[in-house]
Image 1 (cartoon, rainbow, N blue to C red):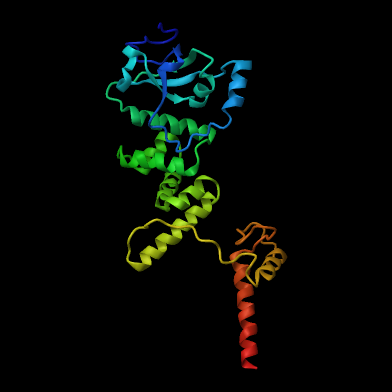
Image 2 (cartoon, helix red, strand yellow):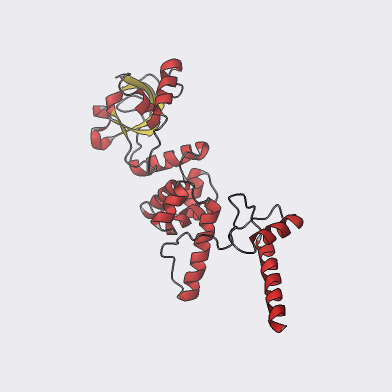
Length: 269
C-alpha cells in the first residue's frame, strides 16, 4: 500500500490517509463501550451504498497483530461504519494515526474514544464511568488529569466515577435509562451518608430503592394539590409518574405534619 497524504506506511509520524482492506481492520479491545449498539447497521449500510462513506475511519497500527509491517489496524473511531461495509466492500477509506515512541495503545484509544464520544454523546453513563475508572486505576490519572484530557470539569469526572459505587444491578438500570443520572448520584450520596454514620467506611455497592412517596401514599393527592397551589414548578417533584405529578419535599412535609396534627387532635378528644 502507498500513502496518499502525510507520512508513510512504515515510518511516518503524522497521520496519513489510505484505503485499507476490510479484513485487516479489527475492533479495538479497549473500546469503552460495554454493549455496542449495532441495531441500525442495516440502515447505515444502505446509506453508505447510496451516498458513499462520508467520513473515513480513524485507525491505529496494531503491533500485537503484526503492526504496520503487516498492515493490521485497530479501529479507533468508525466500528459501525466498518460493520456496515463488511461483505460487500473490499477496502475502506481510513486515516491512520501511527503510535508515537513509548505511547501506550490502550491509553491512546481510551482517550480518543472518550473525546470523540463527548462530541456525540453516544456512550451511556456507566460506560463512561468504567472508561474513566480505567484511566484512574490502570494509568494512575486523577480527576483533574482526566478532565483536562477529555475536556470536562473535575466535578463531572468525579460524578461519573462515583457511579462505580453502585451495585451491578443498579448500574444496569442507569445504563438502560431506568434510573436517571441525577437520581443515581442521589442514591450514592445517600448510601455514603449511611456508611459514614455507621462506621466511616466507604460505600459497598449503593442500591436503588423505590421512593416511599408515590401516588400510592395516602396523602399523595393532597401533597400534589398543595404543590400546585404554591406553584413550586421549578422544584424536583418526588414520586412523579403514571399521571401523578408528585410534590416537592416541602409540600410532602406540610401535608404529613397537617395529618399528624389531625391525629393528635382526635387523640386528645
